[in-house]
Each structure stands twice: as structure tokens, then as C-alpha cells.
Amino acid sequence: MPSSFTASQEELKAAKVPLAWRDQCSALLIPLNTCRRGNYYLPWTCENERHGYEKCQYDDMMRRMKKMSKLRQQQADEVAEATEAII
Image 1 (tube, rainbow, N blue to C red):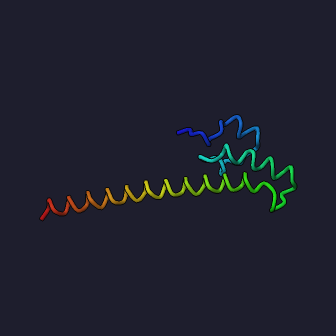
Image 2: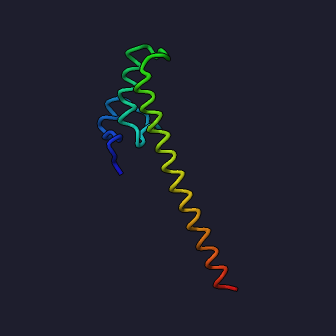
Image 3: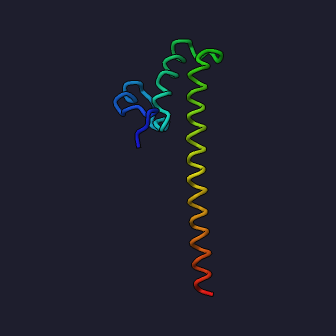
């Protein structure tokens, strides 16, 4: 499911982004890595890009956690209904 924060495979390949980092926030990682390389990975540089990327990662994690919570609740409800039907 492509989003506004997902880069195309060609862009990721051109930017040499490892497969493990190709996720929903990959479009924000490309300018962050470019900034990092341009500033020799100094920790106080590229703060805006890093903050945007980390915020995207956090939002993605929260979205996945909510989805998993709903799935677990659904499964618990199905089990409860199945046990009620048996009794």
C-alpha cells in the first residue's frame, strides 16, 4: 500500500537504501541520508529531517499496534462466542 511517504523501488535502489529500511517512511529516509552524508554524520545536523523520519516511524508503529490490538480483540470475541455456543 503506497503512501505519500513511500518511495518507489527505483528511487530506493538509486539511493542505496538497504532492504531492511524500505518501509512506509522510506521517502523521508532518502533526504535524511543525503543530509547525513553531506554533513559527515554530525549528530547536531539534519535535525529536521531526522525528526520527520522518526515521527513517521513512531506513527507507523502506533498504527500497527492499534491494528494488532483490534485483531486480538476480534479473536478474543470469536473465542468467547465459540465457548458460549458450546455451553
